[in-house]
Length: 294
Image 1: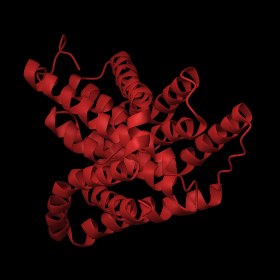
Image 2: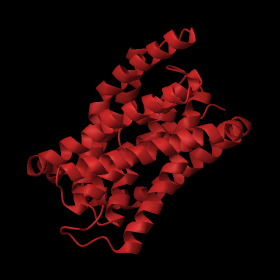
Image 3: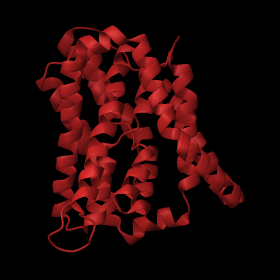
Image 4: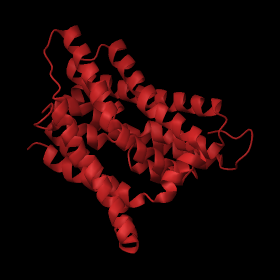
């Protein structure tokens, strides 16, 4: 069974959920704190793919995993990042804004980055890997942009019902992603086990490097601790479901192997960021002011 038929409904629901989170305030926050939005998007759209590309090249990953790692790095932020930002008393409005903007911007940046990556891997490996850019754009519009707009419209015309639906869907988003990971693991158990050491180190390194770099970047921007924590979470938590949808789509790469880095990313992302949340809460680094950490 191709997991695309499982991941597609999950991805559509996640994007619809994000749409029901958005309101006018989420967009006016760009004017309220434009530097934080720019720094957060720079971390997501520039720094994270650059780290992924560097790690994949440095560790000489096989072509299919090279592309899989770069793919998950240039996807937008995950909707769960909003919940994590709330847990560490971050700037939830900023988190929602960053997730929404990255979801729209990556409609254009993802095909560009992946076309560069496929050309690079093809030249280095001697394999001919073709990215159908047009089909990728169409799939992203259908699976990302359309449900996002539907969620926004639903909240605009039926705010009370949208709030109830949001509450229900929010509870099921994480279990749905874990179900996808479990089904995928059952299909590719041996391959995941055989490559977990290499891919685990690579994916874990990607997440930690991204969090460290975004922390340094947000500190350089002299943001308050709540904003810094939010940017760290946003850059460290990507939409793994979208990467799986693109990798396994019969219209694009049609490769379950390429989705393995995204599956491992989904697992390690939650472990690392839950650890980050635990440390933040344990140390009590919530008070705003100089001297407090991220």
